[in-house]
Image 1 (cartoon, one colour):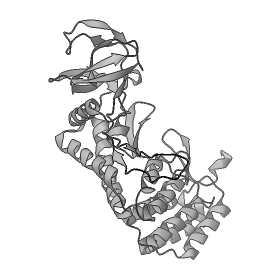
Image 2 (cartoon, one colour):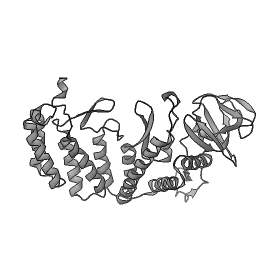
Image 3 (cartoon, helix red, strand yellow):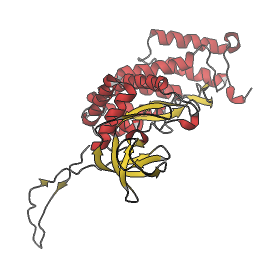
Image 4 (cartoon, helix red, strand yellow):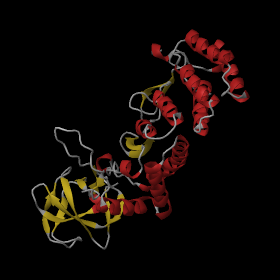
Length: 358
């Protein structure tokens, strides 16, 4: 995105003078800086695999874009992913000029060459139709100016994120964890989301970055989006990124753990959701989904619980006594049933007090 610099000229002397009118300067060009993400990437004298090798580049080496992109692409398999990208002319930190393959580069800027590379990469990874949707989402993210517009952008991104994660899971063939490709450029492609390695470092998954959404909300009119993302951060307070396990759940092994019902976290978060629900937040569909996940954590048939019986019963009784409007009849029935089951947990194969280690 081009940055428009406004230069203000004013005359100064011992007497107060009237400043001259502001005059905009020319837009500052964005110079892309790429990072090598494949060790030994060949710097070539000409674009294409037949170009004479100048030298091999090191992993993590920074390259400055010189603004030239080949008019052809080359299909290459890199770390389990099929790329089909152009070649870029660059300059190294040592002053060497040459051409490198685009698929072996990471980037975070949005200059001309990076934009060309990003568009082609998205098409290769996800297909033309999904790439267009990603572009539309990114445009919405950059231009929204109100709480309602940002809520629509966020709700659209939730479905898009799920679709992209499915494609990431099925489209990357990992031979071993040491050859996992670098996909962190997706943060540039899909703002408000962070790609993270999961499944013991063998797969990438996109997660919502609530901190980034909260910062974007500060730039819009209205406070509904600020309040919603503040609450989202309370669900994931450690780093504001929506990982698999929210604040009301303690992870004790790679793929699971125990509910923290009994600590008061469920009730605090449910109170926040209920307040936004009663205020008719534009984020209501997501608020209801978050409520359902929270209730399911309490009532899961095979759920296990970290806290002791008395603390669990006390918090659940408080939730039911609060009569939150966000809880529908089915929620209340499920929670009431669970409260009775907590009275005799052994009868219903409910495991409590996992903190004891027994």
